[in-house]
Amino acid sequence: MIRPSLIALCLLVAGTAQARAPLRPASDRPDAPKAAFDWFEYTGADPSDAAFKPTSAQYANPILKGTYPDPAVMRVGQDFYLASSTFAWFPGLPVFHSTDLVHWNQIGNAIDRPGMLDFKRLGLSRAVFAPTLSHRDGLFYILNTCVDCGGNFLITAKDPKGPWSDPVWLPAVAGIDPYLFFDDDGGALIVFNGEPPGKPEYSGHRAIWAIGYDARTQKTIGEPKLLLDKGVNPAAKPIWPEGPHILKKDGWYYLVAAEGGTAEGHSQVVLRSKSALGPYAPYTHNPILTQRGLPKNRPLPITSAGHATLVDTPDGKWWATFLAVRPYGDDLYNTGRETFLLPVEWKDGWPIILEDGRTIPYVHAKPDLPATAPAPPPTAGAFTVREEFDGQALPLSWVTLRIPQQRWWRLESGKLVLTARPETIGGMTQPSFWGRRQQHINASASTLMRFDPAKAGDKAGMVAVQNDDHFFFLGLTRDASGQAKIVLERRAGSGDPVDGVQVASAPVAPKAGAPVWLKITARGGLYDFAYALAPGRWTTLKAGEDGTILSTKKAGGFVGALLGVYAHEGLADPGQDR
Image (cartoon, rainbow, N blue to C red):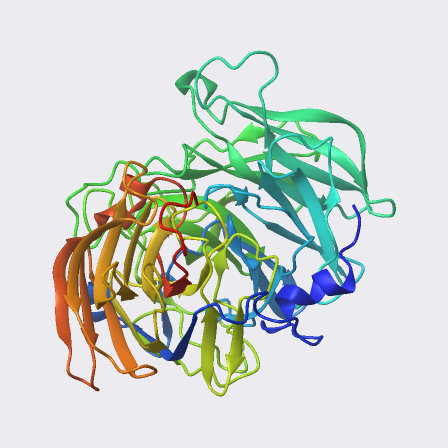
């Protein structure tokens, strides 16, 4: 692959935490409308936070609230590292560090510059799927799948903070969820989910394969070998054996994988063999983790648990990170697939995360490990986070849609300034948007904005978005008559206009450059939208909007909701085709 030029490299990273080079101009049109945001505050508290308060000797699940799915964990010495999926958000594949497995500092994003990958006009639940982490001889590896944008690849770094290398593509690894296993003898295998041998017998019939890998040449060796067809009980026609990992303990090779799809039937299973290439025999009492089959009316349910990664601690204990969800209704959740942590118990040579029929606890005793330093920003329990935009970079946790090819934002005098462009939030493009995850079922986000819409269709404000077809916009615009308005727009499916349908509006007459306060509040499946023209004098524009349109069940895909800021330039000619 051709390495990006210095110019392409600096377009994105200079304005995130990896800033290294002078910025190019934020817009090719200096007269384009600009929206300035003084700060952005997020706060959230869930019923489980009040019902299950951890003591000083306990931690709270999930350990990473909000959409941090497919968590892969790895230990190097005393340090633990974790990466998760980001699909078509950018920067992609966040990398975290911890020493206690509970508190995690985000130290980088593995996909952090244009030229590494091309997300094109992919849906937000395509692109980079589940990453996996490996380490050998001072080099860190991430293996990943860019779905519909290149296939399987590996990237490497000497420091997990980055920079990570350009992708090395793995054409012989045909499938998803690749993981690089290094054996004690120096050999290496890539295990992955792929098509079954022969013709699939039913929907969801998949297999797990392994192929040799040469770390010196960064190439695969030989032909793939089948490790598991269908799943641990082929007669039951199991679906989607995926997320495979191999670990070695006490002379046994353990093949640990998810089964049952990522919805409520999700589970984790394990097999073992005396050889890395099998044959693998399944554990008699699989699954080793699941929440399927539990009463649907149980209070504060946690569901869809699976896609686990096992890791040992320096004192010989074992733990697992995995994804699960916290619905507020019948499989309705807007927070996406979150990261949970539980200990692993070994029984008769088999790892057990949670015996079948037991519910995932919201609080659990902490691992006996040294505290993570410096203390990370909160990611569990109830919390408030305020971003003042007074640093040199946006927080590493902030993301945008797809991969920008030019700088349309800047941090200036304690403000985040967005250049409004014709690219729209619903247009399968790369709009002027930055946001952060909704991390609680009950949450609110607010900001102070200064924006002067010059013409009809110019608008800026806040967005709650799940994908291009499902979002809310709350902000300031100007209608065809020249009237400035605060509007609420909603897109609840591909049948709605690209910009959404206006569901509420209020005429306003702010002075040019005067501040406007905006606030979005989530109450489970209900969302409220408010504005103010003076500090603290909130006016509710619309309350009780159907926020279930941001749920995975209705919007589809694998991502959760984002809350953020957005600017859009209306077309000079209203009849012009977008």
